[in-house]
Length: 263
Image (cartoon, rainbow, N blue to C red; front, side, top):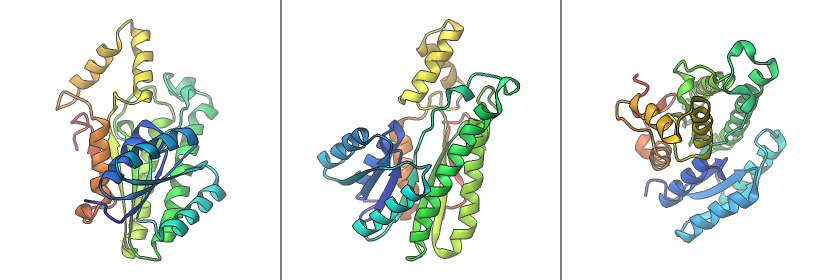
C-alpha cells in the first residue's frame, strides 16, 4: 500500500473531493484525520472508511481560525504521533464572485475568495509544516483548478485565488525542501460528479436555454481526451503524490485537466 502507516490530515473532508481523497488515502493504508465545518458529513466519511477496514477520526475545524487549526494539529500529533501528509480540499462558496464581469464586481465580492482561500491554505500548511520539520519529512498537497492558468471569463476572485495557491505551494516548497518536506499541487478541470460543478453547470445551462448534459458535453469537447476528470482519478493522484513513489516531485502542480490545459 502506498501510504501504509502514514498519518494524513484532510481538511474539507466532508465535501465531494475531500471525502474521495480521504477514502483513497485510507485504502492505501493511511490513518486519516478528517476536518471540516459539518461534523455529520465528516462522520459519514469516517464510517465509510471504517466499513472498508480503515481508521479515521473526525473534528469540526474552521480553517480560517488560526487557533482552531493549531489546536487540531496538536491533537493529531498527540493521537497519531506525527503528521505525514496534509491535504487541504476545502471549498469556499462565493456565488457573488461568479458569473459577472470584473468591472461589475464589488471589491468585497472580488477579494473575499482570495482572502479565504489564501488564509486557509497558509494556516493549514504552516501548522502541518511546523510539526513535520521535527521529523524532517512530510508531504503537503494543495488543490486548485484550471482558471489558475487558463483565462476563463466571469470567475471573479476565484481564478486569482487558485493562482495564489499555486504560488504559495512553490514558496513553501523552496523553504521546506531542505528540511525534507515536499509541497506539491494538483490542478483539475471541472469534475461533473461534484455538487459544485453540477450546480455551476446547471446555472449556465439555464441561462443558455440548454440542458446540463449539453454543458458537460461542451466542456468535454475542449479536452484532448474528450472527457473530464473523475473523482476517483483526482483522489488516486493525490494518494500517489503523497506517497514515496513521488518523492522526486515538489514545487510543481500535477495537471489533471484531461488535456484542456496543455503545458
